[in-house]
Length: 71
Image (cartoon, rainbow, N blue to C red; front, top):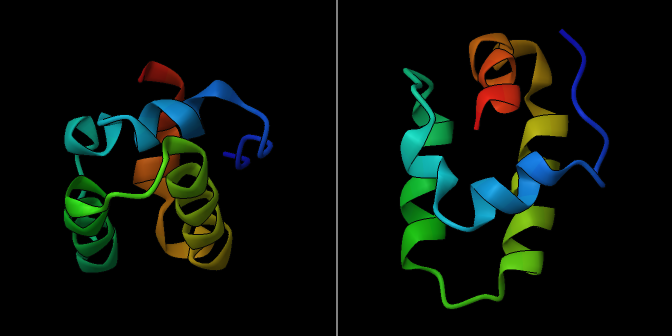
C-alpha cells in the first residue's frame, strides 16, 4: 500500500491524538507516539515529523500504513 501524500488529512489526525489509535508492534512508531503525546509542538509540526518518520521507515510500516485510511 502506498503512503498517502503529505497533504492527506490522516497526518493531521495522527498529530492530533490519532497516534494512540494506531495499532503497532513497531518500537519506533510506539516511541514516536509517546513523544508526540508529550510534545508541546503545534499539530502542523507534529504532522510533518510523523510524515517524515513514515517516509523514512515506510518499508517496515506496512501494517501501520494500511490503517491510515481508517483513522
